[in-house]
Length: 132
Image (cartoon, rainbow, N blue to C red; front, side, top):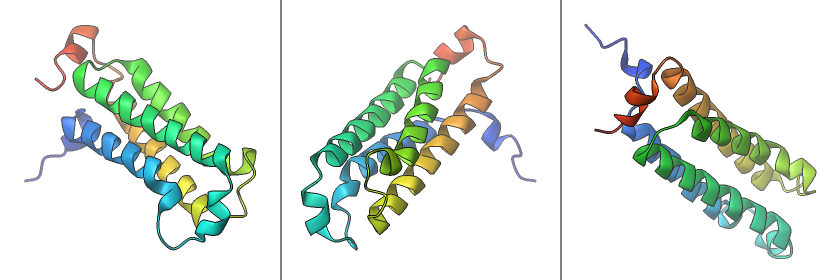
């Protein structure tokens, strides 16, 4: 019989996945399969992407150390910004980069929503026990 409650508890591997996701976002402007000539001239896009990746990485580290609900809400909001940033900052014509950022943003939002759902009914004392 399988463990049906596997996704009902916030596990530390989810925080590690968030840290990995942040690192992937930081590196995304330099992913292969895209034209680097168009990426090199867009400093604002690169700064935005690196900042978003570092924020997601930092929020995931905070969740690993001291879990609180505001971190999960912030992760969802930052993931949503990553999804809309190609359109707001004007690089939506960059095919693969738009797809990377939309995909990575969607994964970030789903991970944040999963973690928020798992921690919704926990008390503050239960959240402090996370990872122990």
